Length: 266
Figure 1 (cartoon, one colour):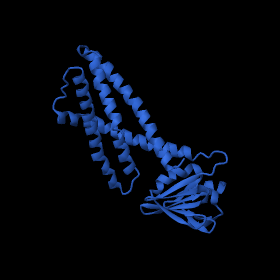
Figure 2 (cartoon, one colour):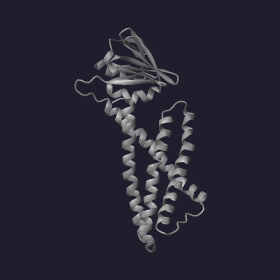
Figure 3 (cartoon, rainbow, N blue to C red):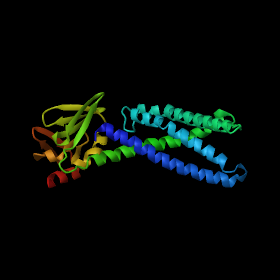
Figure 4 (tube, rainbow, N blue to C red):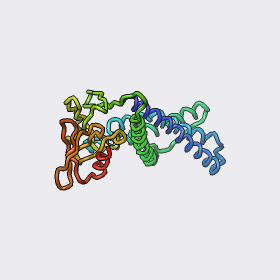
């Protein structure tokens, strides 16, 4: 499953989970309103909460699009400011959507729905929608991370691959061909066994978490190494070492004793 497949699965899993969770919350709200305001009956609360659910699911794509443009690990960090107008737009669409649905349903029933002054109600709903928006973005990140970890569980006879993206360019490489990954400012550089060096915009820490299950070790603040490609390990003084990966030599700082222990075990 490539990057596109992970993203599609992330969206549909998040969409389904949100639909179920929000529906449960709406159902609880219906029961609460019906108990506290029995004069309203059950139909009114069902329309109010049901329209809120429909509108939220219709505009779920707004936080998803903003997440794709500015995920939590995005660099530079100022791009995360995109989520401020995105959250406001999401709340405006949600509120406008459920108000419009309620007005339509009431009109078809020969009644009138009065939402009151729009903007005071909008800013009240914005606080709740802002919290929900933040939870959606966090949920996207968690689901995508778990799916990528699952992707790294090797099936029998399968050679694992990794998609290196540089803007619109994508290069799919076999993980066992990656010798090491080096930090390069806002980018990382993949050093391949065939001599190629490919750049991808990402923090090294994100790749460390993603590839740790496949034997990639942090040996230095600027380096990850593929332990499976180790060909030599030699002291470099003061507790530091040099990791040999074929013709490539990578530093191993004494600040990473666990990496040294794992390389010696291997």
